[in-house]
Length: 397
Ligand SMILES: Cc1cc2nc3c(=O)[nH]c(=O)nc-3n(C[C@H](O)[C@H](O)[C@H](O)COP(=O)(O)OP(=O)(O)OC[C@H]3O[C@@H](n4cnc5c(N)ncnc54)[C@H](O)[C@@H]3O)c2cc1C
Image 1: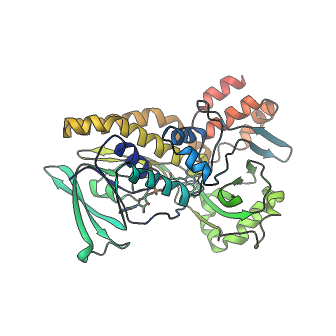
Image 2 (image 1 turned 135 degrees about the horizontal axis):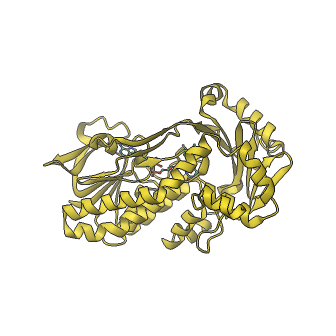
């Protein structure tokens, strides 16, 4: 018997596990995969997420893995317009980072285990267990395909936390409906190259596409191209050709470095970028991270969102677990209400950006603030979900 079973052990699940285990909660952390392992993500983390890692005593260990701090951004809004500034500060944190998920997720998992969480890798959720209308546990199959047989095991807990991503099995099992289905507008493809000069985070907007380049582990740069989702099928037919042509058009100086010799992995990507919010809590269950709500990657907020949801749950749950099932359900409902209240504007802004709403009509404003690094930084704060469009407009005047 555990206090909580967490299904999914990446940035939402492992962060929740480590924060709960550090408070003495008995945690089973299960994932169908093993760690370290990669997942599809361009893994940029804004200063608020960096601040969480620092609070959890994980920032120094992360930087020690060779994860470079990113303290400068150049935003190429047009051929003759480059905005230079810094990430929008959160508290006293003024850097972003872009850690490989092989490193970040493994660091979180290790910290959760060190705090006392029990980790089961290769454990795939098959179904949740119900008693009197309440989720009371989960049944897993061991092995990636959960095909049953001798590898099936069940565990009971006061709460099952679904941190199992966009296609959450927990959400399916509890029948969590979409409460906001804002659609799919973008797709992203990316790869890793060595030998690019360190110019911080470079963003090139225009021509119906966005190109970004930023340093990550192993002295590599991640280079990504974002397109409208309507182009996804066409790009998939010949990813390398479309990708390199897009970088050549938007960022010729970056393209020069994208040689086969300098490339470390194949270019990959996803069009699975729907914007949605699900019903996220009920009797004996709660969803966190992408299982609960997800946004287009255009604003790079998914990992930071997962961290803040983990923090919010972990602040509430230990006392509620001690008080019994009703208190647990009340605390998860309160967590979801706070998340919706605090995250509504960032959700709608991301949807607007994903629909292409940040392009031509913003140009006159961006020209007006080009020599104001404070306002440029504030503009980046919109992407980071820290500044609303209204606040930015008021500051610009
Ligand atoms: C192309 C792309 C680019 C992105 N770029 C960024 C970015 O730059 N910055 C950013 O912050 N976010 C970005 N995101 C979003 C970010 O990757 C996600 O928000 C984040 O990974 C969500 O974390 P999670 O822990 O909720 O889910 P996931 O990372 O999806 O992890 C879910 C885990 O659950 C496990 N699991 C699933 N089903 C089961 C099951 N039945 N049983 C057991 N385990 C299960 C999986 O194995 C997995 O390990 C991007 C996403 C995409 C697709």
